[in-house]
Amino acid sequence: MNAQRSGYALLAVLTLLNVLNFADRFLLVSFGNSIIEDLQLSKFQFTLLTGLVFSVFYVVFGLFAGSLADRHHRPRLIAGGLALWSALTAATGLAVTFAQAALARVFIGVGEAVLTPASMSMLSDRLPPSRHGLAAGVYYLGIPVGIGSSFIFAGVMGPVLGWRGTFITLGLVGLAATALVLLLRDPPRGGGAVLGPEGARIGSFRESVAGLARVLRANPVFGLTLFGAAAAIFVQGVAVLDIVWWVQERGYSESRAQQLTGLLFLVGGIIGALFGGLGADAAYRRGKGGRLKFLAVCYLLVVPVGIGYRFSEPDTFLFYACAFIGAASFMMPYGTTFSTVQEVVPVNLRGAAVALLILFNTLVGHAAGAALAGYLADSFAAGGMEQPLTWAAVIASLPSLLTVPLFWWAGRLHSRA
Image (tube, rainbow, N blue to C red; front, top):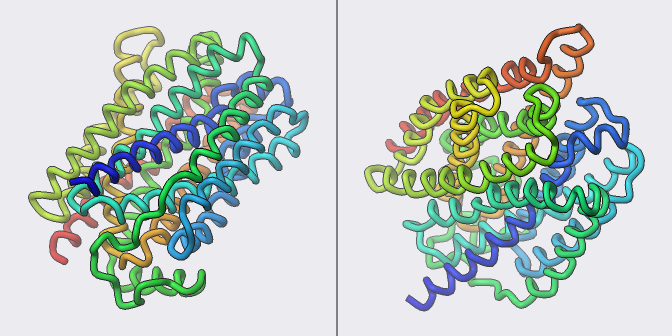
């Protein structure tokens, strides 16, 4: 019982760090209109900053970070990453060109890449398998709370400090938190689970890659879950232009758009994360493929809502209801996908498997979705199309339809394994 309590305490600390992680990451999105105007960016350039520029280095270093998390002291890795991304967040507030902002985003990505592989590996070691789905769902409350807090923080502090001062302030908060992370203990690896055939430890990054390749060849559930997760996250990449869309095509002020979007993510995102985690665990108890099938059914019901959101009249019940369901749906895949990939790989590959899932989520999903939406928005505007942001968002969201067959197929195979 004491061990389980300490596991939940660790979960609380790591969740707070993830809140700071996503607050930092989405502050750029929160100030989309101001930054586009101040740095004279196109929509495509802005989505590169929020997506590809950040994501490439985030996921590439994340693969190494996952391997490091399988071999080294995880709290120290997290502390180093936190110090780096916080310093570069403050530096973002000093950028005056696209190139300078891009350079800061590159190193923010390197710093943030450490957190989740190390955190999910630690939680898997500390908590029993029957609580892994809930643990992942709670940890990923950092997304709605972090994003919501970022929008609200921007709405409150922006009029006082401007976007630059707000970035510097948040960076200083992260630097102050670094010392506290060093007080965490690194739990014993394995948590009582049986180690895979690769042995108790992976000796190098190359061995991590080779081990994951063997799992991908032997177990199609792993690959299907990776691609299904990327399809689910694709629409989140599209949403990096939502504040710009609310202001330019739905008539909201930037401050009101920030605050309303923040509240939607705080409330809707938390409900979605808990619903996704608890619902997935309940389905898992009826069969180990239940989590993935549960997710497939959820997306079958939610995808039409996303289309309705784009064409609803602003400031109406329907508009806010669709936005709320959309914010909730953003959070549903995390508990299922992160717990599933850790179930289908050996214990000594968990950190690397999480890093690979993050690669798919961030690069194939988020970055590609953001870049496509930005490119389409610029192209549609140049062609004189009415509501270019609306149509860019609708068209760029279409790959999310793949979630339903991919998750259902993975669930059926997992049930038979």
